[in-house]
Image 1: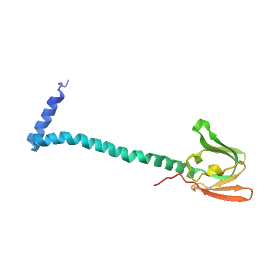
Image 2: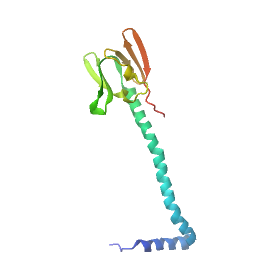
Image 3: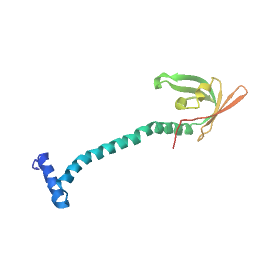
Length: 151
């Protein structure tokens, strides 16, 4: 078992060592006692200032990366709605051949391609590309998905 020490006696021992081993004076020790909490607070606020503003950008970049992985080849939009199960995400359902799929990747898109979609549109999007082409009764429109991701 270790002997119990109160914190005041440990503080005095540390101060004694600093004064006699390292040549610190009691005045310098008093300054150190004031400065250390300030450094700790500055470090804490520095971490907060660095990480909190980058959080929305990190989410936007993750969404952009997911959109880059999406491939829609001649998908026909069968439904367009706000999905109440997922925080009212802007969702489209599309059909490729006999398979029906859905995506909500347009929820954070600044180009507002979701507003342009209509049921019956044919959608074409290559993998690893943010361009999406929409074909509608003789009209060919291209949007570039923008998620405001700065790298």
